[in-house]
Amino acid sequence: MKIGLRQTIVYQVAKPRYIPPSETRNTGITDEESSDVIPEKNMWNAKISFTLLLCASLTATKSEADSLACEEKEKKLAVLDLAKESIIKAKDLHPTCVNDDPDISSNSSKCGVKEKVSAYLDIAMNLIDEARTNYSVCDDTRNITEVVIIRNQTETILLHKKPIDCSQILENGDTESGIYTIWPNHRILGGRPLRVYCDMETNDGGWTVIQRRGDFSPKIDFYRNWHDYKHGFGNITQEFWIGNEKIFALTNQRNYEVRFDIQRVDKQRFFAAYSSFYIDDEDSGYMLHFGNYTGTAGDGIPTLRNMKFSTKDKRNDIWKIKPCTDLKKGGWWYSDCGGTNPNGINNPKADGAEYVNWGPLTKYKALLAIEIKIRPEN
Image 1 (cartoon, rainbow, N blue to C red):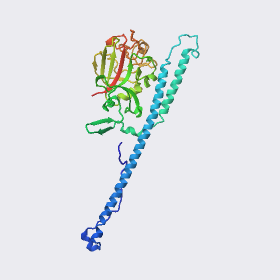
Image 2 (cartoon, helix red, strand yellow):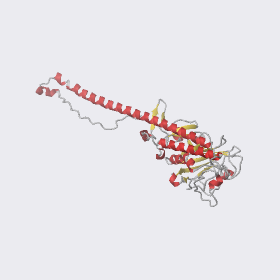
Image 3 (cartoon, rainbow, N blue to C red):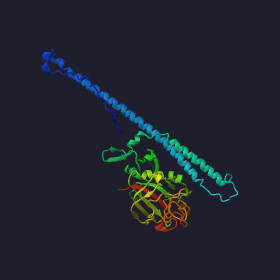
Image 4 (cartoon, rainbow, N blue to C red):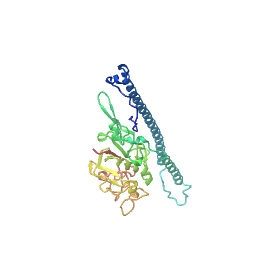
């Protein structure tokens, strides 16, 4: 915690006159009396020093109180995040279904009940989002990327006070993969904390995971609407999509690379990495940008540069026959509907365009697993 005076304090003090011994003959002051003038000057200096020290102590106390208040706000926001995540999990148990029987009213059908439950859950999530707006951003976020230096007898360790991604958590010395809290440095998140999964093992670690598909139960339905893909869904320890708003915030605070870790049904592993990865904001349809390819899986997204995101209720692809989401059964930066489909149906035994696949590696044969992660470029 930094301690310092927030404003300049000016003291106007009557300076005591110092009379040298040579003048005492003319003034009537004896040498013994003149020696008392110097302690009087020191007394004034001591008073000023004490006043400055008191002001510094009061400032430090206020800074500590502000920090505690900020921590309390963050705890409350974390509780709201947990509540929202629980609601998202509940929605996963009530996927949207289609009632194929025209003679049965949707209000009395099972689908009608599921849709009502989903609507109530949406209302609850909106209330949580509204509650979050009542918490102002902590002043502490002005030091969001501040580096605190701790010295010991053997080495100097750099600790990021509020890491903005998993690479800074790794720099703090945390080398185990798992769930961590970060504070992305972007206006759209308002300095709020974000729980993420960090991969600390792959290619020297420091990866922030933004998507995962794999052999988990229950499997998550990725055939969702714009709202769900905007805010994210799933379980970050299993299958999930972190949310387009968060991907936008994360990838616009530094320069990032993106990596696709891919596993075929035969358990063989491959990867595809791209430089200069970021997306635009919602007004631009979360338009996708990336640079050069490196890897072993083949370039699975060559036609997706400058493509906007598509979901089942918002089409942005360029295929003339029908929406790509109808064919692919997931949300993604679709172009002409060919090749890669990371957010399709998770069924490793299947073969078809609607399943999770990586075009140049498996064509339409489904993958066992795929994980998308980002890390700052060197």
